[in-house]
Every structure is written in C-alpha cells, then in structure tokens.
Length: 126
Image 1 (tube, rainbow, N blue to C red):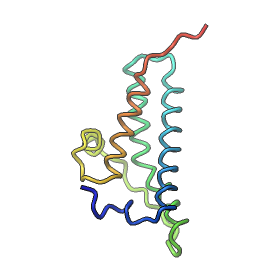
Image 2: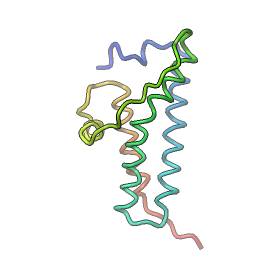
Image 3: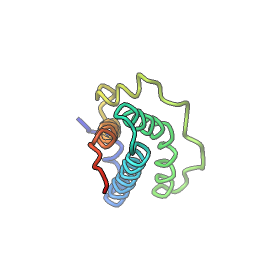
Image 4: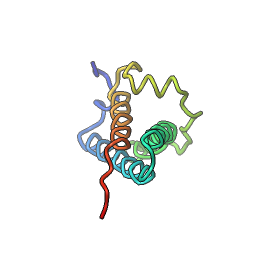
C-alpha cells in the first residue's frame, strides 16, 4: 500500500528524526488542545481540537521542509506554506479517503487523536 512512499526513501536516521519530529508536534498539539479546552464545553473542546488540526495542516509543511533541509544539502530556503486547507481536505484526511500515504494516514490519526484528547473526560481537581 505504501510502496514508493517518500518516508521509505529516507535513510534510517532520517526516518527516526522524522518520527521524532512528528511525535513532538503531535504531543505539543495534544497538550495545547487539552490546555485550551480545560473547563470548556465538549463542543467547544472539539472545536479547539479541529482548529488545532486545521492550523497544523496549514503550517506544518514549513516545519517539515526545514527538517528536510537538514537532511538534504542544497535545498533552497523557500516558503512552502500555501493557502489554508479547505473543509473537504480536512474531512478527507479524517475519513482516510485522501490519497493513501503514510503522511495522510498519519495526519488522519493525529486529527482523531486530538479530538480524543479534547473530548477525554476532565477530572476535578481538589
């Protein structure tokens, strides 16, 4: 299914670094969603999660491009962030109907993870 995926073209160090970067971004966003949603209604927390996911989809290509600049000599500095993703793009990632790639499936999993973090029951603090 993932034959020819760009992740598979990276060396072992590049793959590990990319996984670490993706994990750090996901954990950071999960923390932010939890923090911003604290004390809010479930609907508002879900909105925070979807907003964070949308911002990630829009801005993360620049973060990943800078990472690729460290892996490959000669990549020029450029802005790779384009127009914000539309609702259909967000929905196709969340429903796993976008092009089958590790990146798109990872984005879908992260989106659902952010929603789960947002909707997870809050515990009362003494």
